[in-house]
Amino acid sequence: MADLVGFVGVGRMGGPMASRLLDAGHRLCVYDVSEEATRPLAARGALVAASPAEVASTAEIVFMSLPTPDVVRQVALGGNAGLVNGSSVRTVIDLSTTGPGVATEVAAALAERRIGWVDAPVSGGVTGATAGTLAVMVSCPRATYAKVEPLLGTFGRLFHTGEKPGLAQSAKLANNILAAAAMVATAEAMAMGVKAGLDPKVLLDIINASSGRNTATMDKFPRAVLTRSFDFGFATGLSYKDVRLCVEEAEAMGVPMVLGGTVREMLAVTRARFGAASDFTHIAKLLEEWAGVEIKG
Ligand code: NAD
Image (cartoon, rainbow, N blue to C red):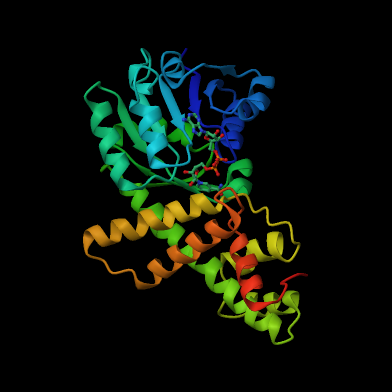
């Protein structure tokens, strides 16, 4: 079953990525704790397994797109149901953002069973996952990279960062702390400008033609804040996890992250106020509440 690929965790990101594998002609065996998540793929012919181990007994290559480091560790190594106990799996590819620590640990445990590990965290959101325009950061041995490159190419543009497990995760954390910082700084600047009397749309147009433009001013605010939809597609709890992992990694290496610590606390407050499942564009709602303004188009 060389063309059959496994996929564990088919949520907001994993769902559209798995769908692209089907579009490319691969057969799929999927597992997710949510039946709602697997249903659209099952309707397109994907097999639905009862555990990660069952996926790993069906496919040689298994992708994961899971929320947190703990869930990745559990799915890969946990008890009888873990991927490590599958009879067919040779390579596990982690598309999640989980930080270099868990990548190093899980890669070593899988290596003992002669199962290869590929870090492949992605950036570009649900839109990029659907269109196949993600940035895919990959760390794994060169020979493995040659094997998985065509499959990963289905998701977007690849960047091979090196062979060391976790290296691609460090790249992803560096990117995500910048994206979160841009979200926080934009919320503060927009709240100030709107309270001063500026039209939010005009202010965004000015910033996007000026030196302050960033991914929040160009995409997140026009799409999910000015429209009041607050549905960019990335959970506050996951953004908090990314920034926390980044600040912790930096601290462990002796790299001070003064601004990073503040961004982490802003996400912690947003999570406490609106819940971990809220969309992370709620950072703007927090500033609206504090400032007593609405940033609407
Ligand atoms: P999500 O919550 O929508 O999807 C995660 C899926 O994993 C869900 O369907 C959930 O049911 C499933 N799951 C949870 N525990 C499980 C378990 N034990 N076994 C099997 N399935 C399990 O999250 P998402 O937004 O798709 O994010 C997935 C990963 O991708 C995260 O690490 C996130 O940080 C990263 N990421 C997200 C985005 C984004 O814009 N949403 C962008 C880049 C990277």
